[in-house]
Amino acid sequence: MPKRVKFEFKFYGFHSGIVLLEKRAMKICCIGAGYVGGPTMAMIAHKCEDIEVTVVDLNESRIAAWNSGDLPVYEPGLEEIVTQNRNNNLFFSTQVDEKVREADMIFISVNTPTKDYGSGSGQAADLRFVESCARGIARAGGGDKIVVEKSTVPVRTAQMVKEILDSANNGYNYQVISNPEFLAEGTAMADLEAPDRVLIGGESSVAGQAAVEKVASIYSQWVPRERIITTNLWSSELSKLTANAFLAQRISSINAISALCEASEANVDEVAKAIGTDSRIGPKFLKSSIGFGGSCFQKDVLNLCYLCRHFDLPEVAGYWEQVIKMNEYQKERFVTRLLDSMFNTVSGKRLAILGYAFKKDTNDARESPAIGICRRLLEEKANLAIYDPRVTKASILGTLGLSELEAEERIEFCATAKQACQGAHAIALLTEWDEFKQLDYSAIYPTMQQPAILFDGRNLLDLDALRTIGYRAHGIGKV
Ligand code: UDX
Ligand code: UDX
Image 1 (tube, rainbow, N blue to C red):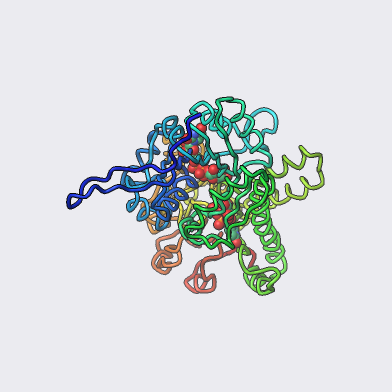
Image 2: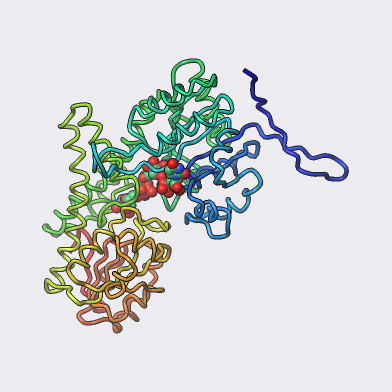
C-alpha cells in the first residue's frame, strides 16, 4: 500500500522572485459546522499555522453563512478569529466526501440529540449521525486516518465507530480517539484558548498511544502539557457525561434550596455565597435560576440515566433523574409564582419577556428554560412581547413549535427591551444579558400597566431599588 506523503506543500505565489511555499504538517477535516465544530476548528487553525483545517457540513446554508460576514454562531471573539484565518488555513465546505478523503485526522462533531422514537425514546442519545459519519469515512478511504469523537457520546461509542471503520476492509488503519469538548457557549473562545484541561482517550496499543500523542501535539501548541489529560477511551467518553451531570446537579441543588429559601425567608444568593467560600464546595455554578437549558445538560443527564438502566443500575439512574425533575419543577414554580402575583390570571395580559437565549452572550435557544415558560404562559392565554438581543424570530418560533401565522395574534417580536415593556402588566427577565442591568427601569415603570410587576428569573437586578421605583419585584429564592 503506498504511504501518504505527510508533508504537503502549498504554492503561495511569487515574492521578489522567490517561490513561496508553505508547509502544512497535517490536514484536519471536521464533520459538523455547529456550535462546537465551528469555534473549536477556528481556534485550532488560529493556533496551528502548519495545519490545514476544513469544516464540512451537509447543511449548505450553514456553510454559506460560515463563509459570509454573518456567521451562524454568535460567540464573543469568534468573528475576529474566523475572519483572520478563513481561506488561509481554515476552510468551510460542503464537499464532505472529498475533504474526508484528503484528511489525516477527522473530527466528528455532529449533533447527538436525545432519541425521540423507538427503543430508548426520551433518554438514549440518537447516534445515527455519528454512525453515518463513520460509514462515510470508511467509504471515502484515502489512507490511514485518526478519527476523533468530539461529539458527546455514550460510553463505548468508539467501539461502534471502530467496528464500522474496520469492516470497510480497505487496507487502511483507523485509530479512534475520544476528545470531548468542554467549552461553554458564550465563553467558547476563552474556554478554547485557555481550557482547564484537554481530555484525550485512546487505545492502549502502540498505534493507539501514537494517535493520542498526535492529537495531543495539536493542543500542546498552545495548551500547557500538564493540562492535557490522557486516559483510556471509555474513561474519556464517560468523563464528559459525568462532568455535565455534576454541573447540572449543582444547579438543581441550589435551585432546590431556592424553593426552601422562599418558604423560610432566607436569601439564596447569600446562602450560595456562604457555602461557596468553603474551598471544598467552591463558588462556581451556584447561581439559582429558572433552571438550566442548552443543548447539553438535559440530553447528557438523560443519556447517563439510560446507560445506567442499560447496565442494570436502576438506583443510579433514579438518582440522576432527580436532577432533571428538579429542573422541571423550578420552571413550573416560576410560572406558578408569576400567576399568583398576577391575581391568578394572565389571560389577555401583555407580558414582557426579556431574554430568550438559554444564557447570555449566545444566540442559542436550544432547550432554553424560556421555551417551557413561554409555552405555559401562552397556555394561560397571556400575550407575549419578546425581546432578545441575539436570538432570531425564526429560532423563537421554531423552539415554540409555532408558525408565524399561529404566533401573530399572541406574540409580538420587539426590537428593544423598552418596546417589549411598553404597556406590559409584568416583566419576566429570563436571560441574564448585561444590557438588562443597564435598562432605565424608572423610565419604563410609568409606561407599564399598574401595578407593575417584575420577575427576575436570573437574580440579576437589585430588587430593593426596583421596589423603591414602585415595582412589585420578585427574584428567585428570596422574598
Ligand atoms: C455539539 C456536539 O457535537 C454534541 O454532541 C454536543 O453534545 C453538543 O454540541 P453542536 O455543535 O451544538 O453539537 O450541534 P449543532 O450546532 O447542531 O451542529 C451539528 C452540525 O452537524 C449541524 O450543522 C449539522 O448540519 C451537521 N451534520 C449533522 C452533518 O454535517 N452531518 C450529519 O450527518 C449530521
Ligand atoms: C455546558 C458545560 O458547561 C460545558 O462544559 C459543556 O461542554 C457543554 O455544556 P453550556 O450548556 O454551553 O455548557 O453552558 P453553561 O454555562 O454550562 O450553562 C448551562 C445552563 O445552566 C444555562 O442555562 C445557564 O444559565 C445555567 N446555569 C449555569 C445556572 O442556572 N446557574 C449557574 O450557576 C450556571
